[in-house]
Length: 253
Image (cartoon, rainbow, N blue to C red):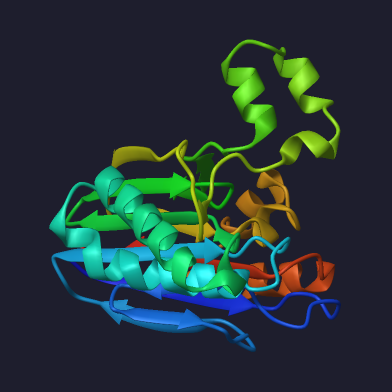
């Protein structure tokens, strides 16, 4: 298996004093920093793990949560089922919160992909996302764990009402936190990951800056590097939030 990856994690806006996002590139974690642009790395392994974590800005120490969650994910991932691994991470955060009061309440989303040959397993909790780009068409593979989506799923609102809800209903109901969290939603999806398929893993700084049509238009290009650089530039112009993305492509027939 030959995978090319383009990635970044960036503070995004001058109004922020720090970047609370973090990313995982198989055995490498990048956190507590802001990359000035897009970096590249290629992989040639039978099983690969990629993930992003978005520290929730409501807590001043959420960058510790995003970094810690990715460290625990890397440590535990290949030892058990994905759902159990993520729930075990939450249990460990609860235990750690007892011994570190300043971190109590620090929280993060999580979204990632495990690629094995021509199969990909997508997992997430929160509103970080995973998209598939196939034949230059964009498809969202995850559903944000927000109050609005929960209401839609339960049939409490219609699709039209969902589209017109105020931003207050975008409140997260899924996240990992230093503290108790008995109702952690974790979604897992498996897909075929074929030759020239592309997966985009990103925090909400990406999709808050650009809508799905704008993101899809970037991937009309035939060059992955151009796609990654354009995505970075267009998001940087918005200066909305911290943003992180990993773009991976299956380049082995």
